[in-house]
Length: 256
Image (cartoon, rainbow, N blue to C red; front, side, top):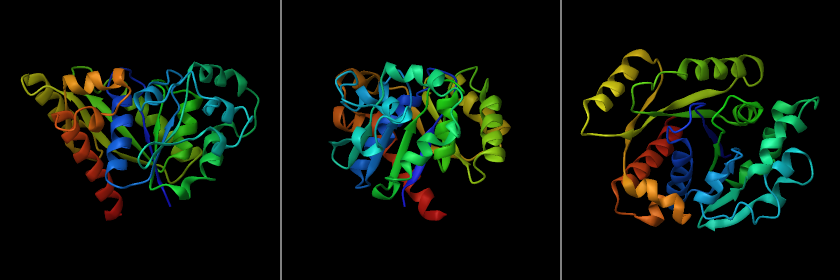
């Protein structure tokens, strides 16, 4: 049965979508069958994996409003071993459409349950907000992976995110776990990056991944070519880091 991991942080610009794209693709390159599920109306995970977000017939929005079944909107084998459930700006209307709908927190969970057994991993990219879409991701996921940027305000908003996860666990999904924290945009040339890592380790009672994702120009370039880093530049330090993270995620699951 597939492990469902939501990549979440309501703070924008922390490498959330970059992590969702490249973790999905690196898991697929390690012979894991992966579904990349884009729950962000910006659709950057969709386009970053090479899918034309405005050219697809159906998106996760159609799934949420009940127009179609989940199988109808999955783009198959976008990359070897990797399917994509796309998103685009239409999804921004979902919040309004869901007003007054019963069990609206579980729409994605109920849909994903129908296909979860076809995959080793389902990776969900959440919007950069604590919205109903994020709640849907959290009720669907087995665990939440939190990317944290190595910068001064790294811890700001994190307590709010953890509080939301705890509320979801208490009221909607008792088995939800925090998968762990992964540091992104690490700059080895600055003392600040090192201080942030130490500060978070000292103040956060959470699992922290050993792999730290560096600031890397190739990582920043790859989405504009619609390619994950392991296809765009497999020899880059960014690719090496995400491959290590993928291996850590796999091994962590096997340790449970």
